[in-house]
Image 1: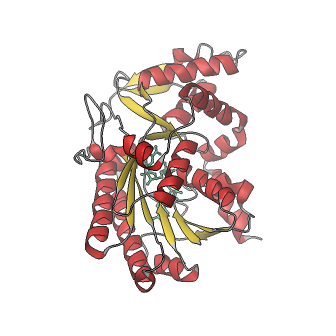
Image 2: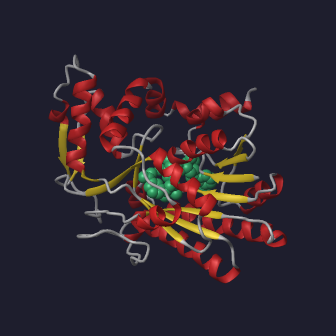
Length: 350
Ligand SMILES: NC(=O)c1ccc[n+]([C@@H]2O[C@H](COP(=O)([O-])OP(=O)(O)OC[C@H]3O[C@@H](n4cnc5c(N)ncnc54)[C@H](O)[C@@H]3O)[C@@H](O)[C@H]2O)c1
């Protein structure tokens, strides 16, 4: 089986590619990524020579690239993660989000439809990896798969657009699309533009820890390994045309989470002159359109597919903070931008 994973050099994508390459040695994993600022092949260093892992640099928005990878690697199924993913950037440059997330997803759906048209007897899956942010903000209770879409940022609006297209390709053309809505992920290899690595690395360097507003925003956290397992189960057993929420019932106010990270650093770095790291917290002007609370009801995937998260948040967070401390080279190259040379150095000059 040839499985195309798009966005496989990003945070969740690289964790998923590693998981799938190791779990399914008889499957070929074709990792298709354009290596934007968010793509880092160094994330995959330990598996770059595995015989069932192929990296293809390409843009989901370019029809020729997408058709080329389907034909070149006889793609049977797709797990689609490639996206512009950072809400703050979407407020600055929404067009890039529309292009990649909406038009790019459309190009992929079209290529899958065209390529699989002649082999409808085989089991194909197009797994569209979406987010809980398409549901907007919720004051009480949790989002179910039936909650209405109410995106509040250009990022979530563009992901909603992608989801609607994916749904339409299923309803109109019968493409075997499954969509997942996952809550906030944390774990290794996440770019330090996102909350947890940003706070851990800033605190380590004695920099300010900028917290939006009064830090009252609530996010529902899931370890990236638990997300990868959920995607695998949905990919194997999910029903085409269905949607599945993925979350661990693990809600934290941003301010409490940041204090937790500081306390972990105090423990892991007892001799640091920055202790107590919580003194570095600084409240900054709130993000426009900032959703107050996300909360995900994942009972469908638990009940129907038997998935459940394994990580306890306290342990997962500690392990994650330790990973950033133990990998200062990775963090430094990501922060300096040097990681962007990795492709040229390792793939083009061999
Ligand atoms: N991070 C989260 O907490 C979270 C939660 C729920 C859902 N998601 C979704 O999961 C997916 C992955 O998220 P992430 O946090 O790993 O993102 P990321 O920003 O770390 O990675 C995105 C990857 O997509 C690639 N990419 C971007 N544009 C491309 C294009 N035009 N063609 C090919 N590749 C391109 C980038 O190079 C990068 O490797 C996204 O679709 C996101 O919406 C993320």
